[in-house]
Image (tube, rainbow, N blue to C red; front, side, top):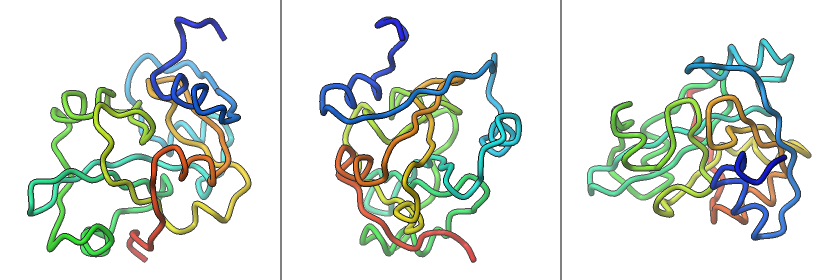
Length: 159
């Protein structure tokens, strides 16, 4: 992969000597992660999406959940010690994270926000998540993902 094609997330993984695979796909504009998985024949369970929320305290938090799941806002709030959290508006994603909708990844945001992954993350040898831009995915080991993000796991999806 040419150097100019690397995203901030990929550069951070390289700097931390973390092994990963990049999967590029043709996608001129945002489509949801389930549609991408369907087009690429990928399993929903080991494919994760990144959501950003704001707590009652005004702090921001990152939640990473399986692509077909819905975030349980109460469980998410509990996992970060907040009374409540709500997802940020789409228009706020880029200014806050440095990434665009559909290309948001928990690796290498503008600031390091507390990050919580759904507990099933560690059920897989390799997980799939956005690579930092639309049309790019990163595949890597969950332990490496937790280490590079400083993240933790919790049960944060609606059952």
